[in-house]
Length: 158
Image (cartoon, rainbow, N blue to C red):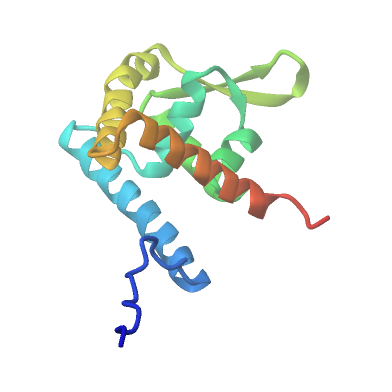
């Protein structure tokens, strides 16, 4: 008599449920923000994560406040207060928009540009920490997969 077949353990993990996947995304985001705040504080930069995002965007060039608000996921009132604080610290300046006399753009001041190098290193250290233990291929794959999830959820249903 032959013995019954032995059930082999599954080699792939079960797909996470929707609620646990959303929770995991939130936990990763919160952990990145907390780590970034700690890293900035240790380097002597009194900046919130939203302020970091605005400075990062401005390091690429001047931008309108509405574009900065979208990047930092802030409403216009909160963005205005954030810009006021960065202006008071001498890191940014509001300048006339060359394409629209009624509009203003925001740009890094020379002091802001000088500070950005060190602030950016804080961001690099956090990204390195987040991706430690992953090969270059795994890092690229993770980024590609996260972009796919974002895109899946960003576009309207067909």
